[in-house]
Image 1: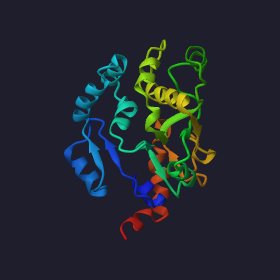
Image 2: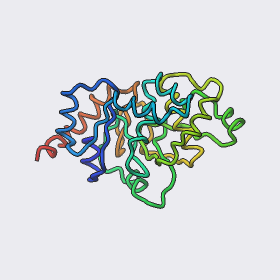
Image 3: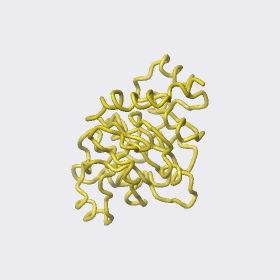
Image 4: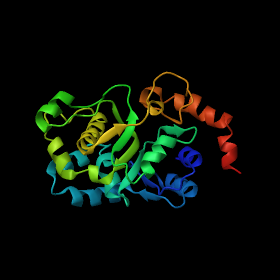
Length: 238
């Protein structure tokens, strides 16, 4: 988040969602660095989302049994705008993400858009979606970085999607699958190539890099090192 605000030069409102592991000392540190942010307590969110999802039994069951489900439901429930920048904690920025900012800030840009994954990672096959739901599922959709419109996270749609055979599968692919389905039905595009997820070393002049699980170690040996060498930390202290 520090790298995003620094290189983007923007002052977007920030909402941090606790995954249940944040202790008070962690919250204090986050509030120190982001004094105007909202930190959503996991326990309080549980109560709120039970009430919101009560008319949607499949959604409620998924929310109560999947650790990553708040990414599908809670982010939008707490959103105070018509769109949001979805940002995982394993994304680092190295320069201004010009195209991403352009899409976020254009009132006429009405698609969801995210970074492109190395391959499609879903719990349902796109062919099944096309046959049963009559729309085309976006391939290689990754839910770690992108623009999501509030209107696209439709609980009626998600309740229907959760009825697809075999959709309740891999614990993180199901979250990404639901966001892909919502985005595909709503309207979706992928960010340009320089935002793509890559597994090899080297930043290659990209504005940012999503350090997914298999390359998480590079977030430190490559990403943080790059920021230090470029004077990022020194500039923060000025």
